[in-house]
Length: 338
Image (cartoon, rainbow, N blue to C red):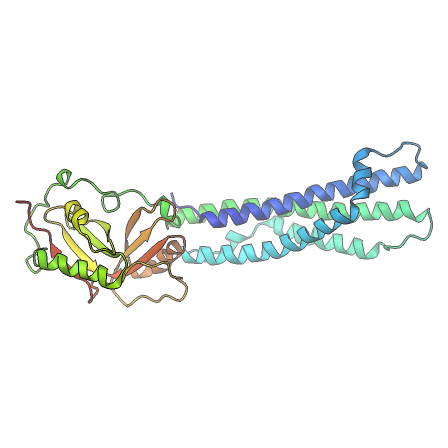
């Protein structure tokens, strides 16, 4: 099943954590304001709990932390929504309702109410009789902020579920590890793969010693690994990497008799995808190397799916996109085993 990128999930979790911590601090401040108000009105008859005393002693530190969290979750939520919209665009979802929930509006109103109460409540107290009133309004302002944070937490949770559903509906795989295993990605022993039935491509030469020397020279000349595409049965494809040393013993023992092998001079790379523009073509061979396991994945890419592929490539260790009729690639047919 298609899922949003892992880094997006981590960003969402980080935003929710910041909102939750800010909500806990707001609850502490509301409880402290009300406890101190009761303490003042009763002339200290009921005493003060150790928790309230600790909050009072660390008020500046906790207040500074709440301010930083407030700036963080406001800026973070705006950035997160824009990033989410851009991510949905890569899978062909342009519905802006996916990044909206009615609780976002509730958060806006509660936040505005909190600021109005804060500005209306004078920060200076000149008489003892003013302090309980000031504390009551301060608790009301913080309580409004707490209500807003509750709305925001629900909003992020709901938007996350909506985005997950949209990505799943699109069917565009955004995590390399979610690609289904296939014959083109999971090597089988050569003896376990039958020779494809039917005639072999007459226009292609056999992969003789000259062909393999050319492949080896390509890798050693560029001093990097070269992508080699193996096609069996006309449809099943998988990637192999020619080592920079040019040693081909393992490669030649792995390819199946009758398979078409195609070498691409341009090596896979870990380059940025944003500025990449592919050469016009009717289709592409997609190369992805998993950043965790190093597994190689093949994808057949239509021109209208290039954007989705590049979104996956940003999370791969290395990637490449080759036109199906690349002029600089060269192919040959592996001869039948003697």
